[in-house]
Structures are given as structure tokens and as C-alpha cells.
Image (cartoon, rainbow, N blue to C red; front, side, top):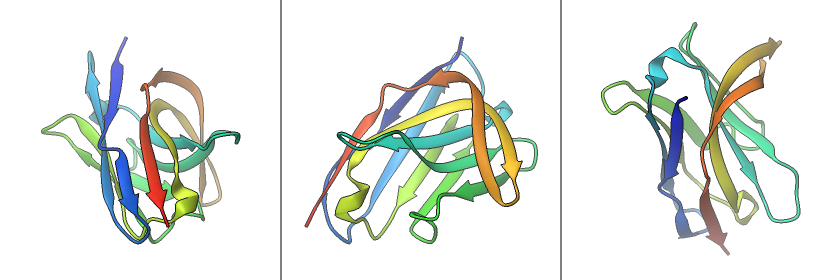
Length: 126
């Protein structure tokens, strides 16, 4: 199976930026749909962004649209999440995952998950 490892998390002030990276081993990420999720303490897991392999397109949750950017780097075999204008509400553990994607209008939903990373902590202070 393919393994995923997230990195790039840390502590940042509100309004700052972080770049998360999802690195794959045992497979080529360019052949998979990849999504980022986050889970804040005491809350449910939340979809953040997705990269669709077949159409090379991206989708974002409304809460991060315009601030976060998901991209694929085939040379590094990674999918990255650039996070700008960070808010305290963005504080969470961020995970990347692979699976199938179903489009509901302009909204992407991932299901039949095949790989999960261990997560990387992002903390935004006010």
C-alpha cells in the first residue's frame, strides 16, 4: 500500500502563512485523487481541499476558499497545501488522504479512502 506523511505544521501568528506537504512512498501521487482534511480538538473531521487526478482540478471548502491553495509536485511526489491569512479557527491537525472523489455540483466529496497520513499540527495564535 501507499504511505502518506504530512509535514510543515507549526505555530504561526494570525495572518501568517504555512505550507504543508503530503509526501507519498510506495506509489505515485500523480495517479491518485488527494484531499486535505483537518480535525480541531473536540470537533469532527472537516474537508479542506482536494486535487482530482483525472481532470487536474481543485476544490475547496468555503471556509478556506481564497486563502488556501492545493497543488501537486510530480517531481517531489507530493501534494502541498499553501495556507495564507491563517486564522485561529484554522487550528487543527491536518491530514492528507487518497480515495475516490464524487462531485456534487462544484463541491468535491472523497469516499472509499485508501491511504491516510499521520497528521501534522497547525496552531494559529491570536
